[in-house]
Length: 436
Picture 1: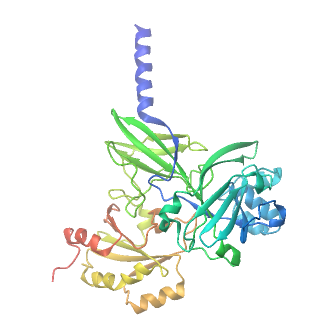
Picture 2: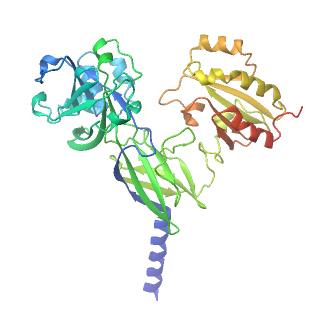
């Protein structure tokens, strides 16, 4: 009898353990799926260090990209390109730096790319995949298109842009290992302006071309989770990873848009009647863990979630709603919408709601001039927005400007929209706009 009870207890314990934790196997997908994809510029190299073809090439450039930021920071510090203070400022974000600096291990964490121009509409790209500083023994990619336009404006040329699986050495401070990542090479016009003329004549970006995707089952229903590391590397740093979870039969291929909000590590997610925490992701994104939470209160970024009172305490008055307008002095659509925002403010029922404008990465002098010019006589806050900043922009994951977020007196997010017109309906429904 005792043995039977023990077996029943172990069975219940096992079932409870399964319920409490979900392990998801993540598989690499080519392309960016629902994500926008990270893009990195490269560093100009001395062409005298390489062998390369010269036939019919009127101009060329050789550049290098690093797939492990820590190694690049260490190299820059050793070469005197970074001061000790600058190097140490990176350590909170990259705690592996002191170890890598001490070991001083040489690894192949980089990739060199040759771009040559035959004529205005014809270029060649060569990738030194074996890293022997010799482009004559590597495959030559031939690209034809209008190089005065951006890549997305060259639809036909995009088909010939090479998608490459690249292996590079990743150093974890103990033992280097070879890992793989998928990239896209973009030789078309970019918004970046270089002080080096040849980099503007022959622009070059390396773009991420992969993400991870997995399926987990809950209450006999299949849910899809997608994750990006927002990087061209293969490493999934918890603080950089972003997640999307799709319900059964929901389109998980939809592209990134302004209304698509991402989860991050340690965020709570409500799935059906259960609340889970994104608790862990493996170093290279192959495994993801969801842990069931006994606390069903959702502090987060989506409609229905709650904003912590510590963030709101100095800005929200008792029993009042708070409408937050996220803008920037550099944001043309934000400036264009200011007259409409001013008109809305005049109509707000001030006994029930406050308006707060949060300026992101904005010049303080310019900001004051704009506030005066448009008579923005409501609450204001300016945020510089750094990696470790815990202000409104980072906490509420605002990446599209303008964004308007309506928060209830108890801290719950009522609405999140990208235009005044879109949020007016909710303000009317809650009687937060005065009736003339």
